Length: 209
Image (cartoon, rainbow, N blue to C red; front, side, top):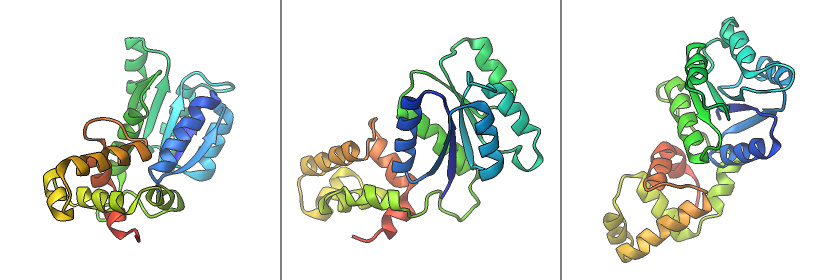
C-alpha cells in the first residue's frame, strides 16, 4: 500500500484529503507544521508528499529543498498544494523539483489524479499500484451486489451496453448503477468510474463478494 504524507496546517483541508486518499486505498500520515512534516518524512519514508507552501516553523519550499538534498529520499514525488496562484511562484516551485503544483481551492479528483499519476510512475513493474486494505474493503462493502458486478465489469473494459447485456438489464439501469457507484465512492467527472476501475483493476477483481 502506497504511503502518502500530507503536510497541511488547515485541519479541514487535511482531513478532507486524508478521507479521500484512504477511500482510494492509500495509507496516510499527517503533519500540521513544517518541522513535524520533515521529521515525519525521515521517520516514515512516504511514497509521495502533499505539502502546503505556507506552514508554521518551516515552509514547504524549505521542506522540498531538504528533501531533494537527502540521498535516500531525494526522488520522492512531491506535490505543492497552495493558495498562491502567482505564475512566477508556481514556476519557482516546479524549478525547485516539485512534481506538481495544485492551487487552492481545488477539486479532490484533481488531487487524486495527480497522486495516482505520480505513484504509478514510481511503482515497480508488475506490482499493482493498490493493494487490498481495510479501507478498500470498506469502500467495496458499501456497494450493493449489483453495483459490485457492474464495477468489476467496468474494470474488465466492458461498455455500458455490454454490461447491460451481460447482466440482462437495460442500459439505463447499468448507467444508474455507475452513477450510484460514483456517489458512494465520492468520484466525479464523466469518466471517473472507468478511471477508478482501471486503476484498481487487479484489486477489484480479487476482492471477495
